[in-house]
Each structure stands twice: as C-alpha cells, then as structure tokens.
Image (cartoon, rainbow, N blue to C red; front, side, top):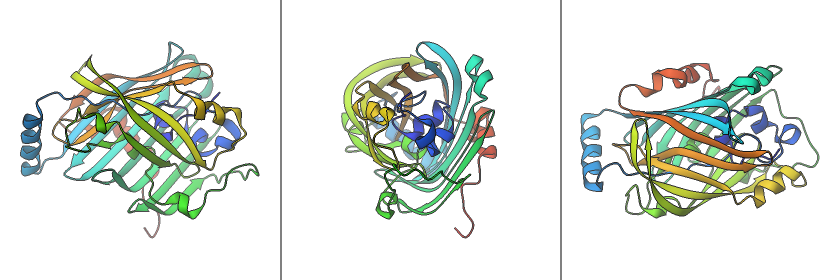
Length: 324
C-alpha cells in the first residue's frame, strides 16, 4: 500500500501511528490514511461572523468544536474518528482519536489518539504534541516539545529501527515545522474571510517525530455542503505530497504518493474563530480511495471533554517532556 500524504491524516484514518513512526518497515505510500484537510465553509456573512468572534473574545469564552468522522476505504466502512478543538483567542488545543472497526478492526485491533496545543497567527505554532497508537500486536508513542516552530525535544517509544536507505533527518528538517494534529488547523489568510480561495493556497511543513514532508494545498472550488450540524459552502483544496526526510525514496509507496494527483480536502470554518478544519479528506491509495468524512459537526459546550475525543485527551502520552 502507499504512504499517507501526511500524518495528520494517518491519525484520522486510524492507520495507527506505527506507520507514522516506522514508515520504513510498514508503509507503502498511501495506505488507509491520508489525504489532507480542506474545506472551508462560511455559515454567515463575514461581518456577522466577525461580530460573533469579537463577542466571544470579549466574553473570554473559548470557542469549541467537535466533529465525528466515518472512515471508508474503497467504499467500505473501516473505522471512525473524532476531532475536538478549543480555541481561545490565539491559543488552541486539539484532540484527535480514531479506531478501526468491523473486520479490519477485529484483525488489527488498530486505534490511536493524539493531542496538540499551541498558538496560531498566519499558521499554527505548536508547543507540544503527543500521539499513541496500538494494534493487536504492538504499540508506539511519540512526544515532542516545540518552540517557535522548532523541535526542542522529541521522544519515540520504542525507538526507531535504523534503516540504511532512509533519508537522514537533519537539524534543519526540525525547524519551521508543524505536527500532524496542528496541520489540521488552518488559520484564515489574506483578508481573513473563510471562503477566500487563498485559504487553500498554502504549504504545510509537517514533522511527525520520524519523517519530514510537505503537504501542498491549492484551491479547486467552493461548493455547498450539508451535514448534521453544519450547512454552508466549503473550500475544496487539491493536495500534493512531497517527501523531505526520514523516508525511503526507493520504496514504491513513496513514489506512488509523490505522483498522486487524487487527493483533496474540504475545509469548513469554526464559528466564532478565524480557523478552518477538515470536513472531508479523500486520498487515492493503491487499494482504493480512502475517504474520511464528517458525519456530525457540533459547536459550543466543552467539546474537548465529550465523546471519544475526551477519551483521547486522557489516553495519549502527556504532550510535554521532562525539563520542557
């Protein structure tokens, strides 16, 4: 199978983090996982959204969102995922959890959870990231501490297996990056309007603790969407995967993903904030199209402590490292 376009998607498609951390031994580019985020929808006029945002900030209340997703591969349901986010002025906290279900889940026992926190302006500036995944036979955990987009400490348990054909990850590869969960957060750009096509046009420099890659987004179209809890236009962005370091360049999966043109993400706005998050992610893999699509969208209340996302927040490794 192929390797996912970026780890944020790997998490949500419940491919398990082992693949994120050990692409060398398990991946082939584009397996059950990946696509990117894209999808921005404006549910109210820009000035109304702006007033709502100012009102929320003035009241000092954090805006929250919770999104449930279904995961399908080649038309078959294989799992579920949940994203819960809290946004307080320029600070964010996001929890993501996923579990494989049905026959796939029975065979693999795959599940995972992740958390990221930090601040955002034109782009996320994560301060901490943690992810833990488990299958019937093994598990893996990653923790990173960051400052100003630079990794200051990282820990992978168990340690990576040294592979001679892997492109080395250098110190420069760990600077100016975002983690896979923070990559799901898209601050508005340009004029700050959620439906501005410029919100699609960006490059996400992702580092998951083992591999460094870019996800290049570009505007495709704006389309209306209706889901339980959400109705309005969204931004549809095309996505491209670019391997940078930590990968094995001669692996067929890596080449497949770099040449893959069938990846897209729909971005929807979180009311009361200036951020967009994925409503749908679609990625062609060597065994069919992997689609992660919202089944329910809700805002308000304490989204970070309800449903599976709340469980994810308590089960991931702590997103801080000793001495950081």
